[in-house]
Length: 254
Image (cartoon, rainbow, N blue to C red; front, side):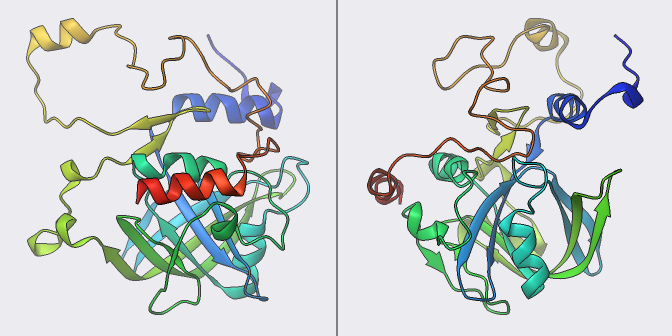
């Protein structure tokens, strides 16, 4: 299959990108408005872009109406700061629920039953229980695309918060002890195996054409990508569970 990118609209191009660039690291981004209202959003267009100083990038699409900027970008522009929190399996449901398009006056930590942890340099809170968080200050914001509604944010990391048991000497992270959640197309994946090459030929043959194992008991070919649970903005207008049930779940997972 050969596809001419010039013939694609934004939604179809997005589907091709998110279905083939896998897995993608998840940045659970916390921000705060000028009025002090905290916001959370999962961002999978996220990666490292520099070492000295350490820098990360986020690519943000507009809301599902394809016009209105997400609160994450509005807050980053207003305050010049944000925090990226890594996500592990117990936090996956709350992280997914934070993709709901809450109103700008809603504190999403409160709505999702999550506790805040203070940062040291920036005003933005971290997610309590996140195994790793980066406090970031904005380096630059770059509009991208033909219509300029997508934006790339480069943030300079000013503080690393690493859970003590994950930090090894000489700056190493015990990655095998960090069951990180990544993004596939419209679904998630759990990082739960490691290897170095070369691998045994028998093992390679046994895994040839083998599908990923589903953890949610859905059919092997299930995907939410063409349902109301997904939108090409990375957000959803489908309401999450009630605040009470989210709070109960958050308390259970701590």
